[in-house]
Length: 268
Ligand code: AMP
Image 1: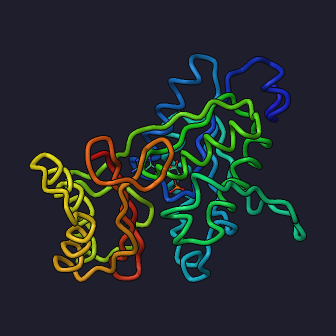
Image 2 (image 1 turned 90 degrees about the vertical axis):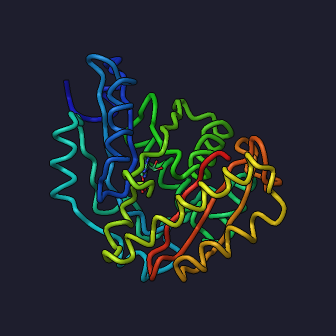
């Protein structure tokens, strides 16, 4: 079989895509394993590694983003990825078309990182067009991003099934993230504060202590670690609209540990 996306889709091979920005870790590994299952025997797993400049609203953040392509290749090989797609660039120099979503992407990450989700939506649609997957796997770690992709697929009638895989965590609760590679040893210890804040919110929900919870969590994070909190938000999992803390709400956090911005979310 020829190795290009048109010929494999014509040949009836089930193709499952895992889009990433590289610096692969156990979270990506879980997505790849899920993709393997979805692809089935004879199916094809494609992982993409592309640090997409269009989704960075901060040049320093883009420059600092970890690049571990040699290790990523090894991990992909070990996990049985069939094709690793790692383009140097994906954009024409004068690219002038982008995809804007105007509902689920507005709050939280969308509000904190102007242009971020436009960059995400655009690159994912480009990857879908290039790879032509039957399904694509995304992580619950980036809940809002996964919701955005589902909305793009629905509203643009893209023939791709979007699958969300649960967040993979380190033994101490810290969500696996490529950005964890940027933390010093002391910062890595402090970074557990996100998971501890989620634990605190769950405890408050059980005991009915929900009044002023957003402020309490912000204070807790700041006092425990001196970290800068960008937002603490309770939201509806489906609509992504803010909601009162309580049963069925999901909590999202964005926190700067030193210069590294970490996000996490969990159902309360
Ligand atoms: P990234 O390389 O950070 O852009 O992430 C690529 C994909 O991996 C996205 O769908 C993320 O949501 C997902 N992902 C990142 N970290 C985790 C994690 N700890 N658990 C599960 N999925 C993750």
